[in-house]
Length: 77
Image (cartoon, rainbow, N blue to C red; front, top):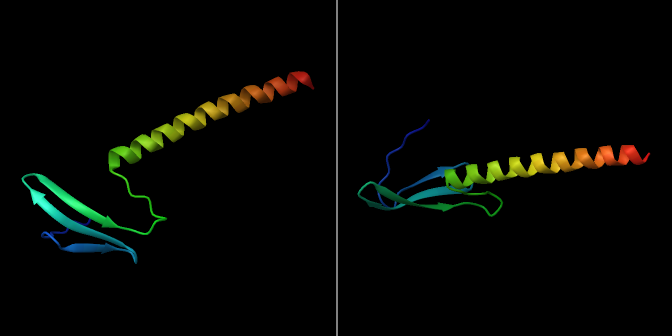
């Protein structure tokens, strides 16, 4: 992991189109601003993990429904 020190209003650039800027520091809290292209998703880690888990669960349910539908079709044939 790369660790960088930045002060308020200083930035880092990721790739060609993502800028991460330190907006404010207050106690143990740091506010950052992220400027990224529209096609790049930006989420807090806990939100990203929740999205992944929901997608995995939805896929499992879809696979079960597809599996059941497959066997129903087999019985008809």
